[in-house]
Image 1 (cartoon, rainbow, N blue to C red):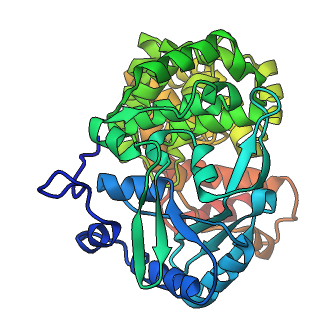
Image 2: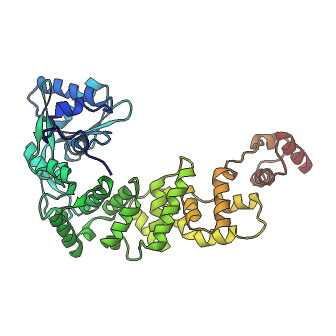
Image 3: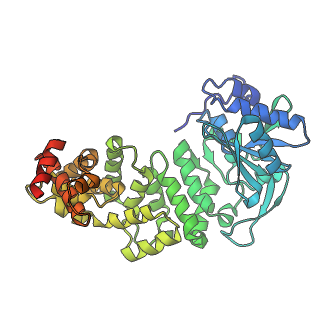
Length: 432
């Protein structure tokens, strides 16, 4: 939960933006140069430029400032190119809705968009967009806490623009939608509301919760494409602690929009807690969000997994991991056999992606979990010294036998029967 720090003066009034930024001791180094560059651009043109959205919200909350959202009532492409020139950044165009991103050298992203107004022809459809004013741009936003802007002026920052009293909702720790059709026009906002609720430790404003419930009862989220739905699920899995979010999805009956077979009950809660513990020792190459998602997606049938992965446009590795996550029982049975050798464990587990293995560890019994942990931390890293070139030098004809010979050398190394190039060479000479 974020605490609201640096938000108020002793007079219980909000600080002006300039002072609020100056008082931040942990201000990321990109913020001041970017604001200075934007101020110079404004000074030399008629552009109106604003900081907006998550950046302003997190500034008021005293939270981490990672990226920046910028909106202009002028030409967003021109602004992006001018800014990139001043801060030595690179411009990427999204093409859609006149949006651009300027990437700084250290990876910070500055999103730049044209102020716009939106209209929705049908529920859950992508909006029809046309240029608008900053006031209209704030009107189209999801929640009051994201509908706060700061105008960039000559010499610095101007006042807050807060037509929907988002600062008041930050104080009272409320998630409040701007109007009753919000979750009909864009039902992805339901998922976003839950993310903000648990990320910030806020509560849902009563009418907002009622509007969410009405949208769910009317099955409006079912009108979203599978890809848009999965994007929201993935964002939830990427949160610091997805457990309360998955419980909320179950409570709000939102899993039904993905598949009727998905549930999140006591068993899943227990497994997810074990997954969180496992991730503390797991290597950095694990994708934590994928590991959490496997716990949910493993409930799907294999036929549905293949179809859904195509609809969601998942990478091939992710699809493979989801399919493998169905094999927990098979793997556990193989690993629970008595007197297994490390080489046998290697052959059982090597075909699997790392994330399903972590899921098997969280779901498995003690013996299976111990083998999985040993494989992840030690066995899979085992190296032998002999290569195909060495076999060729010894006069062994190239072919399928190479794979078998190298596999045998690895097995003998895993089982402690050889440990050096000399041991391997002696074994190979015995084959000649």
